[in-house]
Image (cartoon, rainbow, N blue to C red; front, side):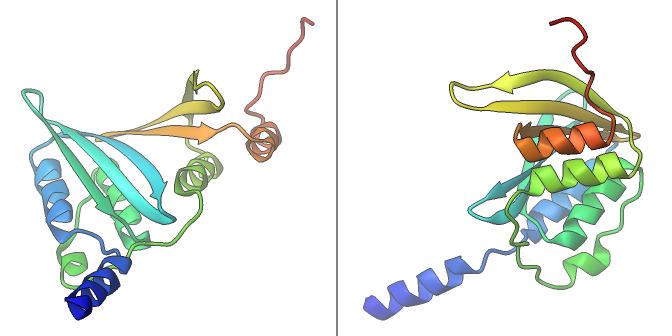
Length: 165
């Protein structure tokens, strides 16, 4: 019994992208679903959550992600889909500290216009909420407001200065 536990724990430490979820994404895209995407870091690894809206029903797709899958998701939002090569191999999840923050910064630096929404506030944390719209859907960002993020926003002329005290 001890050997079985060691094998299971060893397997679970290697987190892989779910090919079934990637196929479901491709099917949703082919079915002209509008895609609503969230990028997250869970236990230090990249995860993507996609809500596919078909009009009469919704389907949630969630999987661990590597850089190639992140690119596939963004391409799907732009109207392009090709997963055959991706599905032919296994893909370990990308190890990353703050995926959503990094994707948000890349989106800003690419020149894409984001719509800034009202901040999401919990008892102890404030999150910047921004939406990036694409041809086939959108990405919702909830980025923790830190000094680094505030500086990034200021450097990219995305903060309106308070004129009235």
